[in-house]
Image (cartoon, rainbow, N blue to C red; front, side):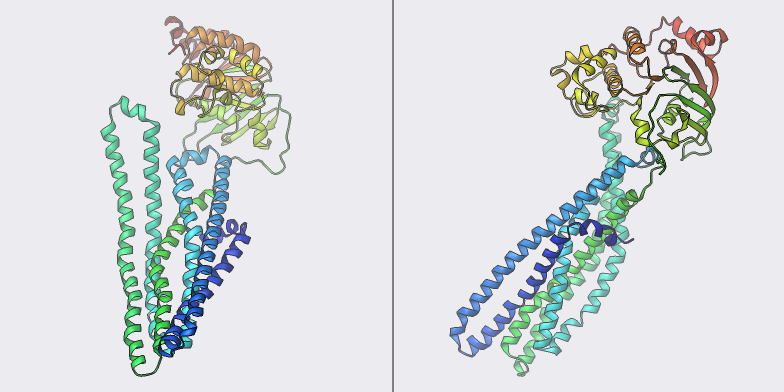
Amino acid sequence: MNPYTWVWPYVRRNRFQLIGATVLIVLNALAIVVAPLLGGMIVDQVIEGGHTERLVPMLAIMIGVTLARTIMRYCYTILFERLGQNALFDIRHDLFAKLQSLDFTFFNTTRTGDIMARLTGDTEAIRHMLCWVSYNAMECVLWFLAAVIVMSVINVPLMIALVVLTPLIGYLTFKMSGQALPVFFNIRQSFARLNTMVEENISGNRVVKAFAREAYEVKKFEKLNRDYKAQNMASATISRRYLPPLDFLASLLTVIVLLLGGGFVIAGRMSLGDLVTFNGFLWMLNQPMRMSGWLINDMQRFAAATVKIRAMMAAKPAITTPAVATPHVMHGAVTFDHVGFAYPDAPATPVLDDINFTVEPGQTMGVLGETGAGKSTLMDLIARFYDPTTGRVLIDGIDAKDWPVHTLRDQITVVMQDLFLFSDTIGDNIRYGNPQADGSFVRQMASIAAADQFIAAMPDGYDTVVGERCVGLSGGQKQRLSLTRALVKDPRILILDDTTSALDMETEAEIQQHLATAAAHKTVFIIASRISSLRHADQIIVLRHGRIVERGTHDTLLAQGGYYAETYQRQLGANEEGGEDNG
């Protein structure tokens, strides 16, 4: 599909504006021939013929037509701008909606800066094409045709002498078009890399300053900036190569008219008025020839911009809902049936291998293991952020693949290690999964998460706006807000991935006590590095290298003397210290 076919459905939605603007462009092109014709008539009839009484009517007609053309051009310029903005609104909407439908696999392999480039620079190139290039190209074509037709009527040999340059101009334009497209595509790629680097630097500015690596980051930016400059200079080189010859050929038209047309007047083969008329139409040939290079440049920029956007629009999520899936009422039973998993970009490296367990509704499972053992990946399979490579994950005895994705995730909440709060009020962040939650329920859940007290102490309480990247909140406060948000959603399955790692032991114990009551009827999974967070679970599994190496209750695992017991002894020997802050 070429870029023009792809963008047409968005333009078609505004077809009435397009039709109205096109009609005005055609009328404007017809009206534009009036002034040169009248100019020639004034020379022949008024100046040379002496019919001075015709001067005022002719000037009045010229002024009226010029005023009408000005109004028409203003109107169709506004219509094209509105058409372009409406189309761009729909494109951005579809792009963002597509982003929401894509899963972890896409975001793991696509740079943030690349996505932002598609939503900003690439869409702007599309807007420029629809709002400016489109009507300028139509004007140039209509002007050229109108000029050729009228000039043919006046003097065919002189018209042919002018139009003979057209094939050469067409050849140069074709060559320029072929060379410009890959260059503009490279510009988009370079811009995306630059965007990514800046986004990462801003997000990681604390790390940069903590390691005093500002100079290194400046050099890294300088390298990408130079590449972006080089790509743009490559575009400028193409323009330098082709635009001056195109401009020269357009200017040559004036020389041809003066030399050849002047000779025809002297020889009596055309009147002076016809020469004036011819000269008045000259810009209608000159302007399209001058503009052709710039318009081709902008068209190729548009084509390059649509490549990435069309690729993202065509991306398919790996996690889909089958057409026959029907909603179910979730109770919360979870079964892993010989589950194995490897990430799509590393299929030869299994992360999980032959995982088997069952958790009944209302039970709590604890998961312990070294870093990289596959604990978080295990939880990602429950929420179906990924599908298992082998085996099945069953929810209430039904394969997770047979559940509607939205229904499944609506009843499962994961409090992830990578904490994130939106730049919004604390109250709206907490209600994110349950916007209808009333204030008393929100405060109740905040109390369970030991968050109500510090929220109330903030300047505007629950209406306090959380700054970008949660600046001003400690790690413990962010964890408690994330836990509150999960509890307010009131899911059937609650997954806590190292949720209390930044809390002191006393606060953690308080949360665990309240959580046991609040989540009594929920299925709870707790990933933790502290034994204190797991000891009251109904069953505990220990992962190592993606396999379950130990399973049982707290007491049975202590009696086995394995990794769990060793971890318990180390933490007990450290007097169960491990809190990083008091939040």
